Image 1 (cartoon, one colour):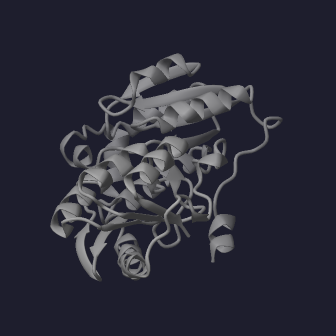
Image 2: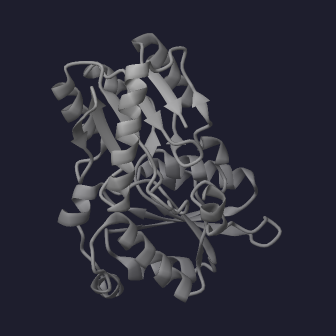
Amino acid sequence: MQDAVRSMQKKAPSSEQLDRIGLIAGSGEFPLLVADSVKRRGLKVIAVAHRGETMHELASKVDEITWIGLGQFGHLLSAFKSRGVHHVLMAGAITKVNMFTNVRPDLRGLTVMEKLSVFHDDDILRAVTRELEKEGITVVDSTTYLPELLAPSGCLTKRSPSREEMEDIELGWMVAKELGHLDIGHCVVVRRKTVLAVEAIEGSDKTILRGGELAKGNAVVVKVSKPNQDLRFDLPAVGLNTVKVMSTVGASVLAIEAGKSLIFDKEEMIELANSSGIAIVSR
């Protein structure tokens, strides 16, 4: 199944086939890391960044940058087409709450939104992708230039999950996949074979806090990709802050999906997990 899914993804052409890449930038450090990696390959980076989401530091890492509001798809399209961009990638999340409160679409953005039957993450991103491809712009995998961010397989920490924790992982995995099938979220918190919290619009960190407080310690956090995950966008991500949040509520295990999850600040994350007695397993 994984091979079949990957075969559906769009790969970037080699550097001999293009001299620039478009970057649709959301929040966090991912867009900055992408820009650095693309520049090291000798390509130009033409970025479209979102006001209130994208870090301002991105401007110093790219060749050109256009700032837009959420939903301004016409501005996004114009920025790429006017600069001869034919391949783009999406990096960084958009705060889900902002998608419902701060969207000010332009005319082209309204056209895209009117075609949506459900206002969920994948529906929005796939609709944007379709519109881009109609204009001759191909969306490539988000990890094309940073494959090392994908989670490897195995136990990443000194401590492995106990048998009881493995049972909680199995339950959480099944529930999280169903949650992803409905395109609601990636994260589930479990304790003693009981689901304590599932992710919705609030995001993973708040889900972990909510579930961890109910667990009163030793919560198991499961964060996985959606069934038939499109590697071009919306990959689940964990990092140092994930473990910090877990440690505040005494959570004991983080389970993620190998090859379909992003890990940021990997060494620091594992170091903190080891010192906090948290097991991290990627499977």
